[in-house]
Image (tube, rainbow, N blue to C red; front, side, top):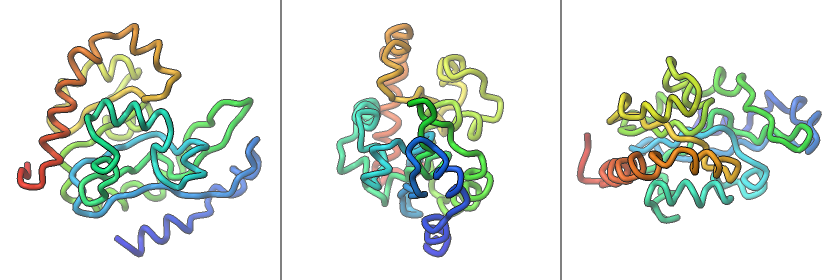
Amino acid sequence: MQPLADDIRACQLCADRFAATETGHAPRPVFRGLPSARLLIAGQAPGARVHESGLPFTDPSGDRLRDWLGLDNAAFYDEARVAILPMAFCFPGYRKGADLPPPPICARTWRSKLLAAYPDIALTLAVGGYAQKYHLPKAGPVTATVAAWRDHLPHIIPLPHPSWRNTAWLKKNPWFEAELLPVLRARVAEVMRHDNPD
């Protein structure tokens, strides 16, 4: 695990791509989790704030996600229980002020190797369309995929991205908070208990 993690943290595959964005930044892979982790949070890619902090979800999206999961900061960042592995490990940069998509080369190069280092994952949270297409190969549009969340229990739960940009989506889909969130929190709590392996 450690040699692979070191290789990922040293990755420069997208250096030229990132240098050409509006932010002109260098690669900074951000991910975490020990091989004992039981909960996998598969997001999209780090944002600008996470690029600066080096810690996943240190932004308003992270606050919302922790609320959805019913986890405080200590539990969320407990590497022994939680792996946070986005579809691309680096901030992709901006184009016309909007986040660029995660470069596919990152998942193609690293994801299967890294996932193999986590044999005890009991629950994967596929956050956003990119993660859903990878972890649920038959996934369609995000709304339809999340609406079909019961089809993937108990091992995968698809979620919309917790970005503030999705506040309108949440208002249009009240079933997410009323029906999915209670099940999500209960399943996360179950997986997070050290003494309750699946």
